[in-house]
Length: 243
Image (cartoon, rainbow, N blue to C red; front, side):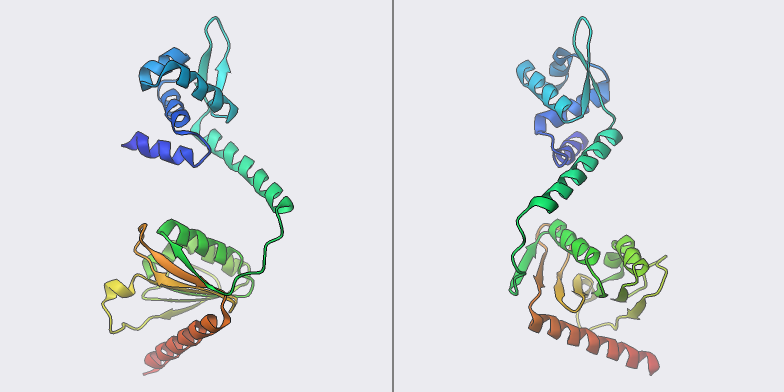
């Protein structure tokens, strides 16, 4: 099971499934011939040699010349760092040369699955220029401590609404402790609302699985509705604190 998970992660770094299996085999056993890799993995020799050739091309292994050709693995740390650096260079090339983006849609976009929702939130936070309003359970907000820290250091106005403060968060930001609502806390704890620069909104329920969905929009009317709703919630919190 562990090896299957590792192989799936390696695929995200550009390796094919057989390349990933061969790479893990080399990491486990050290320097090997193609024949030895085939015996260990159960993959045919022809496919193993193809995978080894591709693995060398991707920077996951080196060829050790001798009377018999051996292959030695590049460490996982070095391989990952090299791939990330390479992707950074590719990113810069794409940004310089890709077609100019069309104007942002003012429709309503449904974002599905927890991973894609996290990707969208990460991008929204990283591109904020003026202010961020973020309302969610403390356990969810805590996952974004690094990004929130970065916002505060950049001088972005940050307003957080949650049941508890984020532990260890420092700097100039505003925190409001949410008032228990007339709904089950288990349901309320899943709710996420994010407003960026009074221009973009993301809202929905997150249960950290593939079925999660959130609504994202730059539609001005929707943004204004959520801004007003969050403003009213803040006023209620302030009234409750004074009473």
